[in-house]
Image: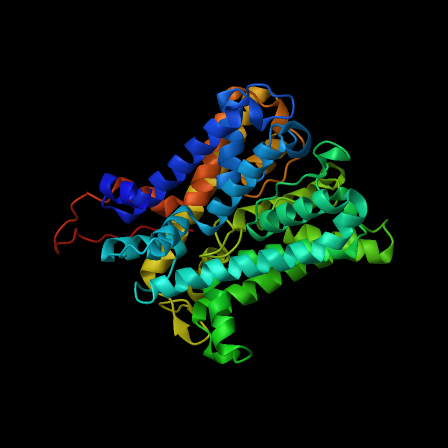
Length: 445
């Protein structure tokens, strides 16, 4: 597949897009087969396409309950798609190329750099190996920690499968689960007071969501925080705030009726999972509109660059806030940890915000109008899709074909990234020379 992608196009951004599209299509075809369902029936292509897109884009929105509709073969296809989508199609293809002994040229290294948001082409092969080894170790460790709980409930064979499936799904921030055998579309609500499952799944989500470059920084510099890259410092700081603040709100205002221990677990898990995992241990429809709105904002923000998570990214929000603070203080450039942020980065962050908000609002308005559903419920759904989260207020299975297509487009956009799509479309556009147009002032605000 690696050779095919680079023969088809020389643009790294187009390679990334084409790679995701090919894997989604192959997954869709496999899921249409009767062997993929428990009832051995043919699944309509649109439904298979929706499921495959949700898996590859590590979202978790589903039309059919994963545990009760799909067979073991279908579930295996889904978890394979999740693994490929979480690590990145280009990263997986590059790993196979390395294993086969093929030489990785400059073009391939440039594509791998764009795919994992690496700072430079240098050391990209070593970084790819680090990503693969980290993912393998973390997922196996997560499965080992989950196994005793699932073994006690489901026995040896099912216990191993459930532990491995949920560990991969959590680390890749996918949100697919197999708990529909208890109640369809129930996610992890049966484990709300179970500390092992709740904490392990939440930690896997965080580990996968802060990015491999951050973990490389942690491995290299350990507790010497000052030596970290500025990006790693920003990611860890913003991630901590985005977990702590919602946890405090949920604890005091959403789950006050639960016992103290369960209340703490519920609050912590619901603060972690919107960015961008898609599991839930609480009934989201029972939460207040304020709580649902906070989750919607968290879904749009998402995880961090170079991670298994989607969304606008924590760094995007941090740059925008720093830029606003710089304007308030009448400074020319925003900065973090005594490092200046370039104007180009601020422009890119503003563009990403506008793209996400436009698609999020437009998709929600169209679905609300077509399906006759409350606008807040539909906006929750579109935020979940474009943030590649997978949380839902229960409307996904009842949506019509056009609404499903809208969500498919949003999931793909959220995983591939808005700038990647734009750069792919404009990669052959000839840029202007050094001449610049006259400048004129325009008042804003």
